[in-house]
Image (cartoon, rainbow, N blue to C red; front, side):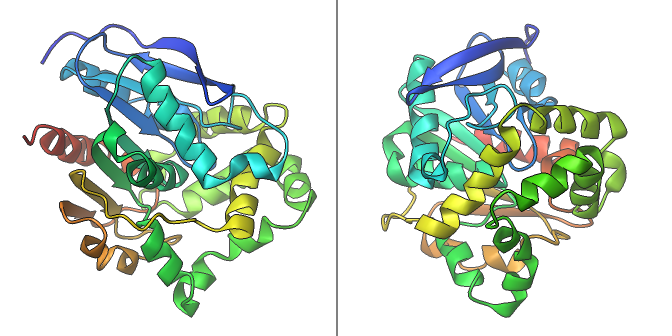
Length: 288
């Protein structure tokens, strides 16, 4: 273990936009940490120093549309291939050809796609509580998962979701995040205030909902090639948003796969079970 420098705030130009990011660690393999909805880089705040202390260079960007990153207008600018390109070019902007890519929720969806579209850029892949896109496409056809994914279809309405959420952004986030957590004390009032401030940035709410609008309009566009990078799935078993069964059969698409299930843990697995997730990640990253 090495002493880590303090986290540094930066902006990174990638794919025609600027992403706000926090970075920690000056040397070692690059680890890109991708957050989900309705979060921002802050969901990985404990992982930046942890990875830096163990010899990695970690970066947690705000995804396009989120918090302090650029927010291009128009649903078309939030298609999954564009989001994957953001990460691919971010890796190169940081002076690397390859990186370890870690994602949760929407960040996990993007991570899967980076590994499929740009396999040469992904040394290892770790995904928290987001199934392989092909498995989600299978699952969404079932009544069980369709019921869990009702919000995706609600978000397709123009302006109304933004209006309703903006009326009480903190309260909305409290219901969404604590409602999907098994260990509810993992989401503090201070955490909710950070996320509310991030989602309250001008244009952020529409931009973040455009992820869901784009995926319904244009689909996952799942490339056909398997993912050959060593892959770790970490899954909170009490996820009320995405069923555990969506992980079954993933090895069909990912030959070098390992899955770690965490009981009594909900959707926000990297926050609800921070220590266990860190231990699993560290062991996975240390594998030759």
